Amino acid sequence: MQDNLMITIVDENGSKQFSVTKFLHKIIIYGSIIFIIILILGYFLMANIISKLEDIESKRIDALGEYHQIYEQNEILKSNIQDKANELEIINNKINDLQSVVNIRHFSKDDAERKSIKLDSITKPQKALMLQIIPNGSPLERYTKMQETSHKRQKDQSIKSSDYQVGNVTNKGYDYYTKEKEPVFATADGLVEFVRKNYRYGYGNIIRLVHTSGFSSAYAHLSSITVKRGQFVSKGQIIGYSTPSANPNVISLYYEVRFLSRGLDNLSFIDWNAENFSSIFTADDNSIIDFQSLLWAMDDILKLKAISTHYVKEALQNTKPTSKESQIDSKTNKIDSKKSQTIESKEDKPHKTKSEAK
Image (cartoon, rainbow, N blue to C red; front, top):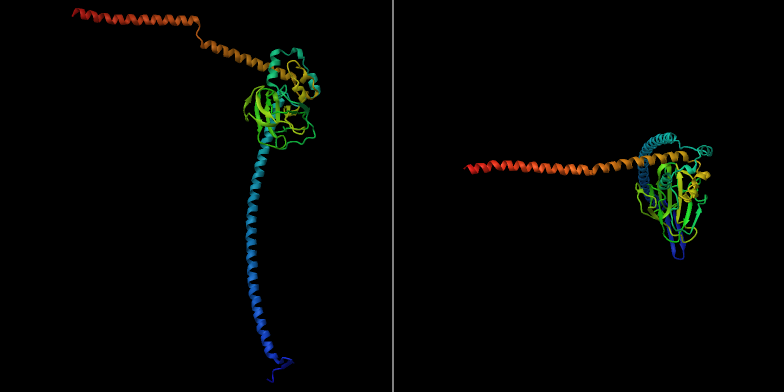
């Protein structure tokens, strides 16, 4: 008791004594317990942190592996793109060489004036052939309004064919408006090069036809399409149907004509027919066309057509026997039948003689 400091507290409930040594002993015990609890909690906390760090490191390694894989794929794609670019450059060079050979590249107005032609010299077969294979007339028979397309309209970036793009500002296409769904006709013989269906944005459903001598025509904002890519079509054939226009903002049909993917005076082609045959020859925007070379090409086509027709007629005539040949064949058949009868009669006579002798 001497080593202990006793503290006595007296109140109305009585007196209490506290020993300092016992209090310190409790503090030490409680402090040790708290310290051990802190150590245990710290251990688990550190273990959890280490586990999370390991997960992060594992994810980092996986991400690094994916990065290297994507990097390798990107390098392969870059190599493929470069190869395709080289192939496209080779194709473009070949196309440029072909254009130079046929002499239809980069004509100026001066070239057109030097190569001006006399319309009176064009023959009726040439006119008929040109109106059959070069786009002319309107793709719609019935419409409420037709107007030149505004150049402020946004380009359709989802459609490109080499340097061809529907709605290019250098071209002067035309917008048609119809109250009803009207049939859309091909304006010339051609091949369906491009078809886009079930598309609601930009120029919507589109058909692009390629025609002879470098001409092409495009038909956009169609409600439905009746042809397929790679199909041959004839002038006046239904290729689709227009979209009914409920208000001025809804375009029923967009139509344009191009030459070597370059813009033309579309109205001159829409107005072009047998009665108004000079419309495309006098338009300034059509000066890129070498009409003299075009007429030479028409002559070549007509000559080839005449030669093929001549050989077809000869082939048909050779397959049908002439009257003289038929007469000779009938006489030959009669002679052969008579010979067979005489042979049979000669064979029968010896038998008869043998029977009679017996």
